[in-house]
Image (cartoon, rainbow, N blue to C red; front, side):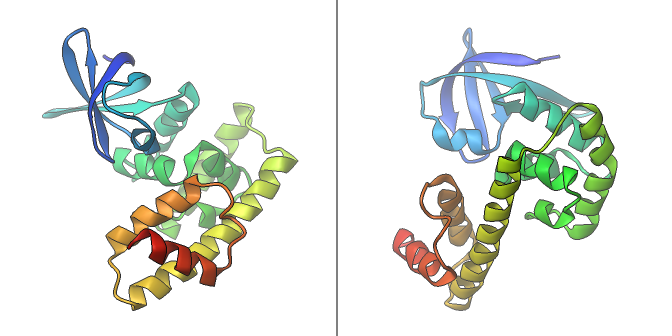
Length: 201
């Protein structure tokens, strides 16, 4: 079973990397990590090997913490690798952990994750995370509030762009950039719409 890979990126898309290690190429499914890399860049990944009767998939993570949270998520009935990787890709470890510890299921709602699944994640992982020593600092609590407010404004901007006829795929690509850039968290919904329109031209 593969648990770790170190090599070079030979190919990348938003959903996976092809990593060459000693002349062998491994297709590894990833989250946000693929957006910050380039071909022929060195990389090391912590790997979860997902095996089924007729299927073998590799999921790669930058840190052991990401891998550990992924494993906890897929242990929950009804939360498979697709949902877990989607959560990590769109929210990241800190946002997921803070939402669970604060019992804010609404903070876990992303594409493919409804409130019922989010409630189940909070219920099953709250005590597990506490036992593992996870805590939320005051700084992280404040950041979570800022993130939640930004998410609300992004949803308003997204709805406005959909009403103008823009595709959800194009809108999601711009939203990913918004969350990765500094200085955008204080923009109003109206200014976010203007920014997103400028990025889609």
